[in-house]
Image (tube, rainbow, N blue to C red; front, side, top):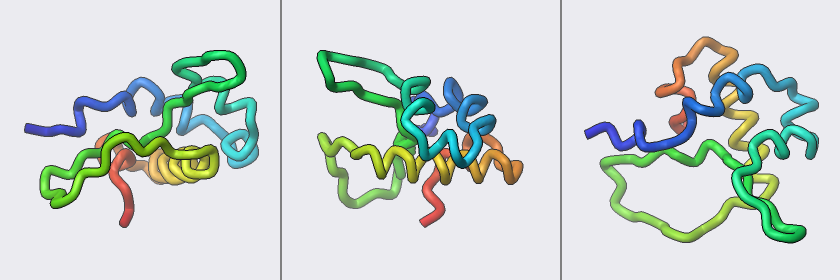
Length: 94
């Protein structure tokens, strides 16, 4: 089973690929990826969908902060602009 098909990366891939470095580091782009909001808090999509079927440890409930979201978007954007398909671009380079 390919666990990575369960993610939302494909839904956001074109917006991630089209974003400039300035947009990726700015707050306006994150509004495009907002998936929920309550009061002054908001939740944004970040490309953390990848699930390794070989993982020996699973951490559940950790929410990435703004810096981690931006770093993930920059990495995914770079991969897509380099010609990687969504399956390759959604996988951590580490």
